[in-house]
Image (cartoon, rainbow, N blue to C red):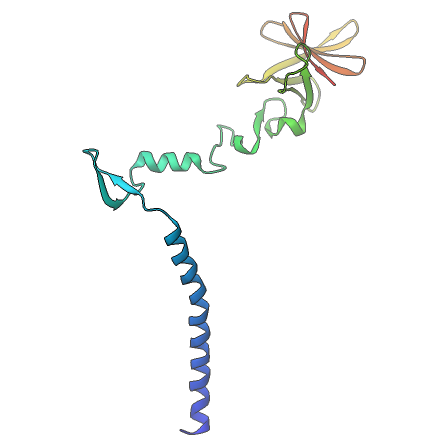
Length: 181
């Protein structure tokens, strides 16, 4: 062979060798993953175990897998609950109440670990109270009182929020239930 014909052959061989060498670690990694996993036995309709691995092929299994994926738990407003987001009626967007709201602790139980959160609209005409254990927030409207302003629920007025000594307090039927620390 002449020197001019050897050069393309050497270059081709070198490139091919590099490509094959790059595939080796991936094949070893895949083989290691396959040997680490335990085979799953399938159950047929009679209840006996077969030798073939189970596959998630039914629509119910596929839907269940999609529901368990992180971030797939969007509510009707598009808020991702698993990331801590929920819809705010007064801010008209998904918020994390622990970032956007004012934290209120239990006024009746000093050992309580769950907190309520108070969020205001941009114009402060409305506020929203998120109580622990409640699926819905409470929309409160601002009302002028003799000592300033209070926000109360439009439905019955028994749930109110106001300030005393520069701290926010939530009351139900005149009794303090949550207060700002």
